[in-house]
Image (cartoon, rainbow, N blue to C red; front, side, top):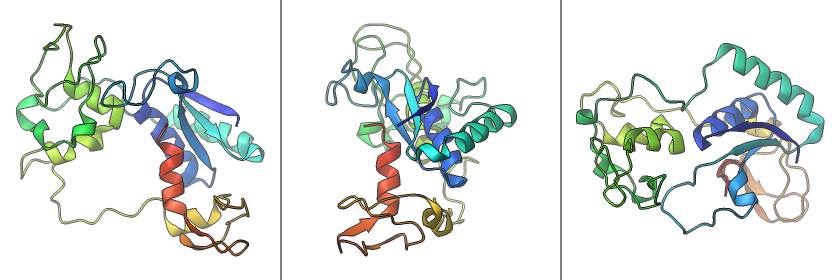
Length: 213
């Protein structure tokens, strides 16, 4: 699959891939360290740091994808990049995070404790910013459950988030049946493949493409 762009964090790569998918371009995210065998699943809790590639599944969409990425770079700052506006650690309760979202220390690999005010790794004393590591590895949305009720960033707004991707977007993507590779374009988000009768779920397929695993 052609490599379209490279990003230092998984969150940045996902933002780019989602923008492509919204325009009907089937994209995937991969971890270059996994591809080179430099990091193996299970070594640490959390996603390994390194280079993340955004690839295009269908080569005929490569020119369109390049144009979208160029436009995205011109009008939108890179999501997940370090910011001067990180949340106040006192507003966050990281104990509400799923354990798999707690990041490893970049220096020694030890899983860091759920303490937003932590400034040094308890194991190796290397300076760390737990909040920044979570955001760069999992995106700012990973912190939403950690805000106190009533905080502007808390999720209890009463507004239902729209489903992503939309049914219309899923219908336009050049996805193929996982079992027989028959095209699923213009078909429902989930159902039975008309060629082999095996079940498919397009949203689950997109999730796997973005997982970088």
